[in-house]
Length: 219
Image (tube, rainbow, N blue to C red):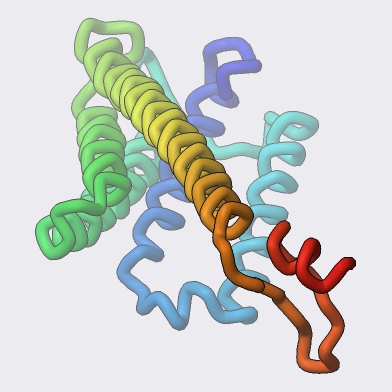
């Protein structure tokens, strides 16, 4: 909706996005085995395709969309769509919150809990706002905070992942140095031993021997 001029179509696309987005978030209540099933994935693909078609149809036939505002006030259709979308988001936030409380280390659930709350409250506040008034901008601020928090969270996760990778690289290099030193020490002990040391395979093929064995056996 951000690519069209403010007006009926602008509000319609925003409202539909809120409703469909909230509905998709609310799918988190379905069991994992159900949400990952083949039929479920097909359903989601069909829903996304239908959403794109609806948006495209709205752009080429804007005169067919329902009336969304009248005399600076939102119509019942616009209010109902946003209330439903907001309710779906709040419902999803409850599920994500339960997941986070059950698994306190699941910070992804924490992120989606806050996102769902922000988007849910924005959808609910839409119903009480008037076009271009202060309350109209208030729920825009809430949505902006949701996106801002997501960016900050992803940035922090990226930093954490980078530090973990750096630590793994350092530990791997240390392990390689330790292994190399151990191999060198082992080789020194073998080469200076005053005993015959030979390494062979099961078919008696010599794969390695120390200096004493080579001198004694003349190999």
